[in-house]
Length: 367
Image (cartoon, rainbow, N blue to C red; front, side, top):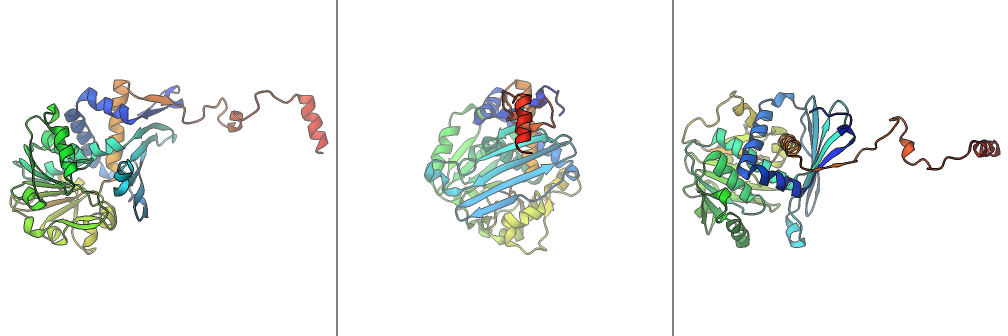
């Protein structure tokens, strides 16, 4: 990811429209597959990353977070919020941007929107985990929570996992109507059956995979033990900060539980309900072949996905590579360009220099 001296003076900027253009150029199924591939590659080199839980500033209405990570060559961070009441104000619940920089110089190569990209990378991560944990013949998924990220989850599981039917439920029927409108007669959803359900229990019944992706910042119990069926895989996406859960604790006790980065998930995920000695497995170990995913077809598996910085690292790498290949984005002068890198003052030095005689007189006046 090296740059020339000329390009080093400019930072690539990708707007939401640029990311949408990239997805339009390659197609959403290819984009999801590509992002999933980058995420899997990075999980397989898990030990090469300098990792930490994200830094969060909580308020009564939401949370603002920074998510940094680095390997030996590249540093990234994401700024992201989660404010469930935002939609009433005409704002998205989740808004994000991120930076990708060189480790050896610190130069920011890319600044990108990450709101649309986060929805893509979250869906791709869900699919990567499901491939490793769900039964291979899974064809029906319940999707509980039909908000901003739901279409991406549905399409990722359709194209990457082989899901043929998605059973939909949201307490806000307008959200389900929105999802149906977006995917109805959409070529990207060709071959995918959408079934609207009247309750979570109805949607979950008979499903091979259950994905929960709700937004409310509450300790909810959307999936309860009585809904479980043998062999079910649960993809818990919505529980992602302290005080916000979706899954009843007894569901975790009945399942084999997998996480991204355990220190973070114990604080933010559905795992926050459990004792500190409750056993979980980081998903990279399954992908690397160190441990099995499910032990048998009847076992219940649960992926407690809170979103980890490495996934944004992967996503930023992916969109940066595609943007360069497709010549999309704008070069912006984010960092000062200096004739003498030791002379930052040159940026504000007067255009007309003070004559030397006057400068000497000024010096004598203050002597």
